[in-house]
Image 1 (cartoon, helix red, strand yellow):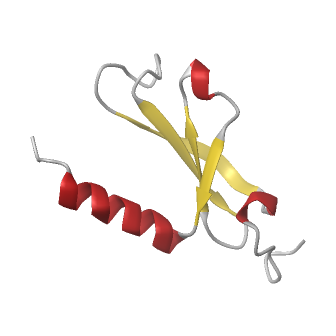
Image 2 (tube, helix red, strand yellow; image 1 turned 90 degrees about the horizontal axis):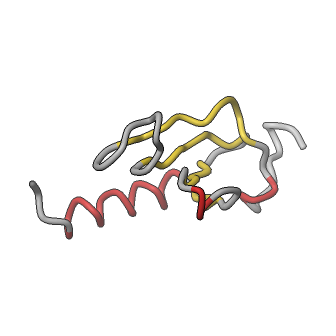
Length: 81
């Protein structure tokens, strides 16, 4: 599979580079209790992972548009601190 002809199935696309950690709340990047990690997919899209032990090895993948819609929904519905 090449970057010019990526699979339409996001779960068939390889991950590009390393995962970045987004942490907040009751833990730190060292404890990973309140973190998710994110990485870009070859050909577009992103892979999200839960860093907690219970979520190990599980991924949610989405297109840029899907993740932007998710982020906007969260911003619109979650009360600000």
